[in-house]
Image 1 (spheres, helix red, strand yellow):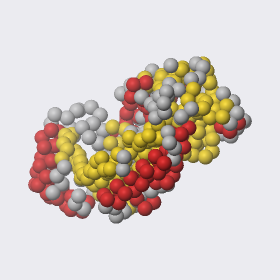
Image 2 (cartoon, rainbow, N blue to C red; image 1 turned 45 degrees about the vertical axis):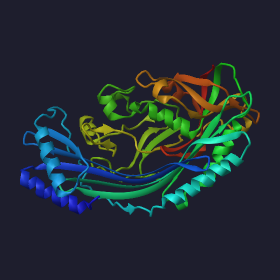
Image 3 (tube, helix red, strand yellow; image 1 turned 120 degrees about the vertical axis):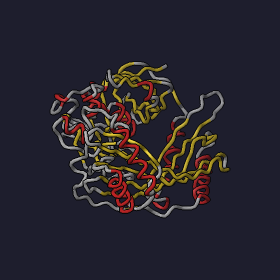
Image 4 (cartoon, rainbow, N blue to C red; image 1 turned 180 degrees about the vertical axis):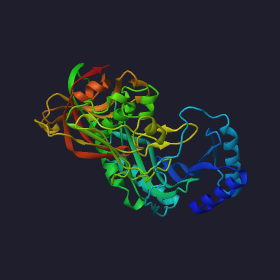
Length: 445
């Protein structure tokens, strides 16, 4: 993708030629190489280059038009500006998006890209990992789902007021999922994921060890009695559930009346005082950190829940203007500006009166991973009923749970938290410790 100065210059020249006074452009490009294998042989080797550029133009009546392109050479930019200008006369007349007031604020960005490894090295690493995972137990018959990928990502934003931002990043990731086969038993499986800035830093061994331990731990599964249980969510499971109900703190959802919250929900107690949550795109454990959003607003740490109190919504420039707040760096621009989380940081709020330990737990369900969130979450009703992978923990004994679902009301779940552990789990979507919740319904099929 051309340098930000080249795009800025060609956009300015084309806008002057077309008589366009107000415009902005956001673009990103991804250069990716990924491999998959099966039984020691390459299953898929793929390389791709993808780019996406969104151009917005405002006309003299302050209505806006949007177009997208993959072409940012001078001719492509000029055509996109012209098309967006023509579309602007059909744009909405109420709540018209505008520039972020922070798009021109001082911001240091960097190019953090690492050299990409050749595909044959990716294959060799993945084949070796599959071989070791299969050797971990005779019961592990295959590794049907796996992948090793590396990506270079470039992003930029510019506007006619002089904003010009650009950044680059790289990351590598690995996924391994082992599957068991035993006579007279259902196949069971489990996986693990790791991500890092480069292939050299990628914790392949840790991913392999976690996948093996989880897969083996599901061999001796049993049904549990349906009823109310103390439930412990892994960091990954809790974040996936939190994200499924992100309309609670998403300002666009709130304005669209597609949320469990209203503008008046700020500063109200929505969770146990034991829980605090931030959205922090710049968290040091966020490998895919971004310094600015689609409107050029700098990202930052945004407290969402502070000791159980809803303290902030996530905003774009438009939602912040309508709710008399500040943009928070969560805008994705396109035909419509969307608001979406960046990276969760979940941590303890006030100190718990009683601490709990899985090693000493009695008749406690530990949920490692939630499934079917697309079907089992009613985000506007606040309810969920989800199958899960997990174990029954009882006096140090760990027994895999066979075919069960966890159900409840999310707002009630937040208020029923009895302990937030200190040690966080790092996931692609955030960092979060294990969360203990009392009185959730477990139904065994």
